[in-house]
Image 1 (cartoon, rainbow, N blue to C red):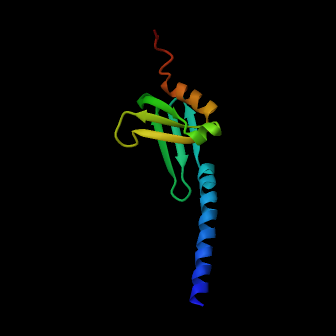
Image 2 (cartoon, rainbow, N blue to C red; image 1 turned 90 degrees about the vertical axis):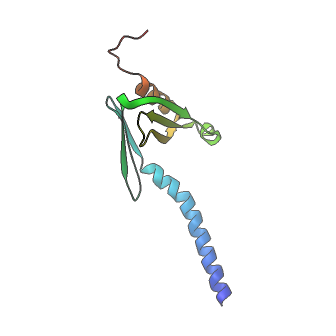
Image 3 (cartoon, rainbow, N blue to C red; image 1 turned 120 degrees about the vertical axis):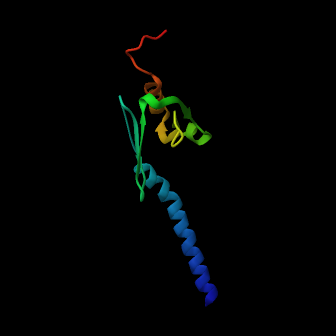
Length: 118
């Protein structure tokens, strides 16, 4: 009887873990929101504990658009914004389409349009 109970618990945990492994990334992706405006980049994320990160455009040092092998396969990218500072010195926004990540990167590092460029 104990073996049967142990087997049932193991099967339940395995099925529960598998469901969680498939459902968690989708739920996490659905809870990410971002906004890009003249002031900078705002990222809101979280399922149970929600956080909001604001990166002022004036603090952006440089940006990276990164793609791993699976991201390239699905034409996705991660935008990484590096700032001046110690806390949250780099902020990542994953799950963007590659075609969306590049214009955001260009906008954030574009600088002030009022200044004359060489």
